[in-house]
Image (cartoon, rainbow, N blue to C red; front, side, top):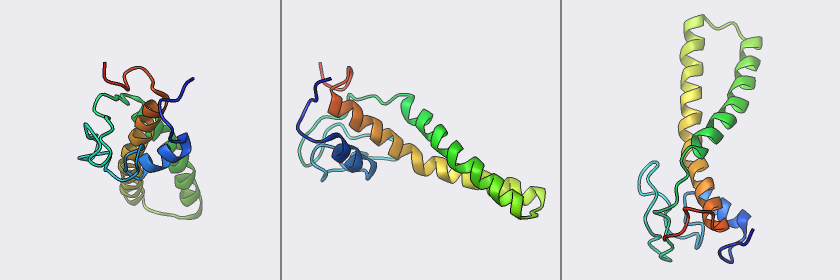
Length: 124
Protein backbone atom coordinates (compact mmCIF):
# COMPACT_ATOMS: atom_id res chain seq x y z
CA UNK A 1 0.00 0.00 0.00
CA UNK A 2 1.45 3.33 -1.03
CA UNK A 3 1.56 6.10 1.55
CA UNK A 4 0.04 9.41 0.48
CA UNK A 5 2.62 11.64 2.15
CA UNK A 6 5.90 11.71 4.04
CA UNK A 7 4.61 11.64 7.65
CA UNK A 8 5.34 8.33 9.44
CA UNK A 9 2.21 6.42 10.51
CA UNK A 10 3.13 6.42 14.23
CA UNK A 11 3.70 10.18 14.26
CA UNK A 12 0.46 10.89 12.41
CA UNK A 13 -1.46 8.59 14.78
CA UNK A 14 0.08 10.18 17.88
CA UNK A 15 -0.71 13.68 16.64
CA UNK A 16 -4.30 12.71 15.84
CA UNK A 17 -4.90 11.01 19.21
CA UNK A 18 -3.75 14.25 20.83
CA UNK A 19 -6.37 16.12 18.77
CA UNK A 20 -3.93 17.71 16.36
CA UNK A 21 -3.56 17.64 12.59
CA UNK A 22 -1.85 14.37 11.57
CA UNK A 23 0.07 16.24 8.87
CA UNK A 24 1.64 19.17 10.72
CA UNK A 25 0.80 18.49 14.37
CA UNK A 26 -0.12 22.14 14.91
CA UNK A 27 -3.75 22.71 13.87
CA UNK A 28 -6.75 21.19 15.62
CA UNK A 29 -8.32 18.05 14.12
CA UNK A 30 -11.78 18.64 15.65
CA UNK A 31 -13.90 21.78 15.78
CA UNK A 32 -16.32 20.14 18.25
CA UNK A 33 -16.48 16.89 20.22
CA UNK A 34 -16.71 14.61 17.15
CA UNK A 35 -16.82 17.14 14.29
CA UNK A 36 -13.59 17.13 12.34
CA UNK A 37 -12.36 20.27 10.64
CA UNK A 38 -12.69 20.64 6.88
CA UNK A 39 -9.07 21.81 6.55
CA UNK A 40 -6.20 22.26 8.97
CA UNK A 41 -5.96 25.91 10.00
CA UNK A 42 -2.15 25.76 9.88
CA UNK A 43 -1.11 23.59 6.91
CA UNK A 44 -4.39 23.50 4.96
CA UNK A 45 -4.54 19.70 4.70
CA UNK A 46 -8.08 18.52 3.95
CA UNK A 47 -9.88 16.21 6.41
CA UNK A 48 -13.53 17.07 5.77
CA UNK A 49 -14.12 14.26 3.30
CA UNK A 50 -12.61 11.51 5.48
CA UNK A 51 -15.26 9.29 7.06
CA UNK A 52 -14.36 7.13 10.05
CA UNK A 53 -18.00 5.88 10.14
CA UNK A 54 -18.44 2.91 12.50
CA UNK A 55 -14.76 2.25 13.15
CA UNK A 56 -14.43 4.66 16.09
CA UNK A 57 -17.44 3.33 18.06
CA UNK A 58 -16.27 -0.23 17.36
CA UNK A 59 -12.78 0.47 18.73
CA UNK A 60 -14.27 2.32 21.71
CA UNK A 61 -16.48 -0.65 22.59
CA UNK A 62 -13.52 -3.04 22.34
CA UNK A 63 -11.23 -0.86 24.49
CA UNK A 64 -13.83 0.03 27.12
CA UNK A 65 -14.88 -3.60 27.39
CA UNK A 66 -11.31 -4.73 27.95
CA UNK A 67 -10.67 -2.00 30.54
CA UNK A 68 -14.09 -1.88 32.21
CA UNK A 69 -14.92 -5.55 32.78
CA UNK A 70 -11.63 -6.59 34.48
CA UNK A 71 -11.66 -3.45 36.64
CA UNK A 72 -15.26 -4.02 37.64
CA UNK A 73 -14.67 -7.68 38.45
CA UNK A 74 -11.59 -6.84 40.51
CA UNK A 75 -13.38 -4.21 42.58
CA UNK A 76 -16.48 -6.36 43.04
CA UNK A 77 -14.29 -9.26 44.23
CA UNK A 78 -12.62 -7.18 46.94
CA UNK A 79 -15.44 -4.91 48.12
CA UNK A 80 -18.96 -5.25 49.42
CA UNK A 81 -20.72 -2.29 47.85
CA UNK A 82 -24.53 -2.11 47.93
CA UNK A 83 -26.15 -2.95 44.60
CA UNK A 84 -27.34 0.59 43.88
CA UNK A 85 -23.85 1.99 44.52
CA UNK A 86 -22.31 -0.55 42.14
CA UNK A 87 -24.89 0.25 39.46
CA UNK A 88 -24.27 4.01 39.70
CA UNK A 89 -20.49 3.66 39.99
CA UNK A 90 -20.03 1.31 37.06
CA UNK A 91 -22.47 3.22 34.85
CA UNK A 92 -20.48 6.41 35.43
CA UNK A 93 -17.14 4.68 34.84
CA UNK A 94 -18.40 3.06 31.64
CA UNK A 95 -19.88 6.31 30.32
CA UNK A 96 -16.77 8.32 31.25
CA UNK A 97 -14.39 5.90 29.56
CA UNK A 98 -16.57 5.79 26.45
CA UNK A 99 -16.77 9.58 26.21
CA UNK A 100 -13.01 9.91 26.71
CA UNK A 101 -11.99 7.23 24.20
CA UNK A 102 -14.48 7.87 21.36
CA UNK A 103 -12.97 11.11 19.94
CA UNK A 104 -9.46 9.68 20.21
CA UNK A 105 -10.54 6.53 18.38
CA UNK A 106 -12.13 8.63 15.63
CA UNK A 107 -8.97 10.73 15.37
CA UNK A 108 -6.86 7.57 15.07
CA UNK A 109 -8.99 6.25 12.22
CA UNK A 110 -8.95 9.63 10.47
CA UNK A 111 -5.15 9.60 10.64
CA UNK A 112 -4.95 6.04 9.32
CA UNK A 113 -7.33 6.78 6.44
CA UNK A 114 -5.46 10.01 5.65
CA UNK A 115 -1.96 8.53 5.76
CA UNK A 116 -2.83 5.47 3.67
CA UNK A 117 -4.87 7.41 1.11
CA UNK A 118 -7.73 4.95 1.54
CA UNK A 119 -10.83 5.45 -0.64
CA UNK A 120 -12.89 8.34 0.62
CA UNK A 121 -9.91 10.09 2.19
CA UNK A 122 -9.09 12.39 -0.73
CA UNK A 123 -11.35 14.85 -2.52
CA UNK A 124 -12.47 13.60 -5.92
